[in-house]
Length: 199
Length: 302
Image (cartoon, rainbow over all chains, first blue to last red; front, side, top):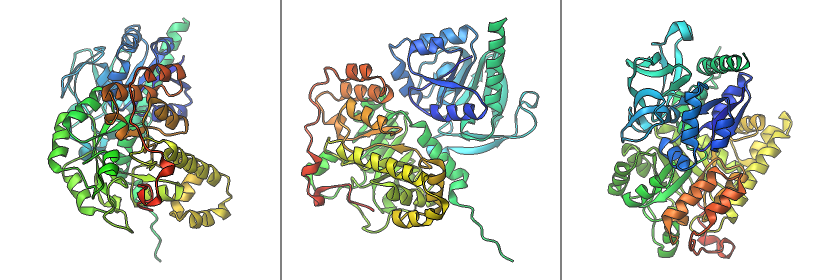
C-alpha cells in the first residue's frame, strides 16, 4: 500500500527518512490527484497556516477528507495534527474536521519554550512501558478531544498523542527522534488497511 | 587515569530543538519585513516565517549609513501581528543585539552580513544562547565554522539587495561541490581537508560520512522571481529567504504568492510558469558583477 507524505512545506523529508528506517516506501505528494492515489497519508510538521495557503483552491483539502472518511490511515504531527482537527484556536482557524478535537496553536509559547521531554504518561497497552522521548517545537495542544478519541500519551495531563479509528495525531515530532513506536503504530494501521483491501 | 570527554554541544536537547525548528521551515519561504503591515501580507501570502529588519537590503544599499537591528517596537509589533515564526537580524558579533532579540523571544536570530558588522573578527558564540541562529556562508569552510559556533541553520550569502541570483547560485554550488569532494576522501585525508577548509575537524568528519550539512541548508541573497526560487530548490536549497525581491516589486502580494508557489512546486515547470505570469515589474536590481568588492555585503564575516 502506497504511503503519500504531503510535501507542500515542513519536515516531510524527516518523515520519509523515519519511515524508510522501518522499511516502508513512501512518496512525496503535492497535488489532489496524488493524495487521492495514495493508500495512506502523512501530514508532516511545519507551519499549518502556510500549508493551508498552499492547499487553497487545489482540491487537496477535499482529497484529504475523502481519504480519511474512506478509512485510509492518516498520520499527522504538529502542524499535521492541526490540519486534521475539527476546531483550531489561537488564532481561530480552519481544520479539515476529520479528528474530533480542539487544537490550540503555539500553546506553550514561542521557540524559547520548545523542548525535549520524556513522556511517562503513555498508554502502556499500545506503546509498551518505556517512557517516550518527545520533541515539542512551538507545539500545539489538544485542548479537548471527543468521546471517540483514544488518548495514547499525555503531557502535564493534556493529550499529545491521540488515535481515532484510522487517524493518528501527535502534537510533538516522533519523526525527529530514534523512538519509532508511533511510526510503527501508523505502519500497523497501513498493513491492516492493505489486508482489508486485499480481502 | 583521566579520560577525555568528547561530548559536544551538538548532542544536547537544546541544540536538537533549535535544528528542529529549522526542519519545520523546510520547503518554505522566509520573507524580509520591516513592519507589522508587511508581516501580515507575508503571512497571508504563505510565508513560513518572517524576518524583521530595519530596512530591506536594497534600501541599505541605496541609503548607506550603519544598518542595525530592527527597532524593538517594530519587532514587538511584528510578533503581535502574525502567528508564524518571527526571525530578526543582528549585526555580526553584536552580543548585546543578540541578547535583546532573545529577550524579545524572537524564534530565530540571523547573524547577518546584511547589517553593518559590529566585530571585524568574531562571530557570536551561538551555543551560549537558547534561541537558534542562522548564518550565511559562501563556502563549506565558512558554513562549518558557523555551525561550530552553534548555528542551527545555514544559508547562502548571495549578494543581498541586488535582485541578482548569481552569487546565491555560486555559493550553493560551491558548498555542494565541497561536500561531495569530502565524501570521496579517505580517512587519512580528513585532517588536511579540515586544515584547508579552516573548519572544525569533527564537523568535517561528520560531513564526509553523511554527505550533507548537519543542519538545514537554505538559500538567500538576490532572489527576485519565482524562477529564482525554483532554481535555488533545484540546486539543493531546502528553503528560500527573500529580501528586497518582494516588497520592492510592483505588486508585493502577487509576487509573494508566486514565489511561495514556485518554492513548493519547483520541480513542476508548468506551475512555476503559471505563477510567473502577470506579476508586473520585479525589482530593477543591480548586476552583482558590477559591484566593487567594497560594495559587496557577502565579504563581511569570514
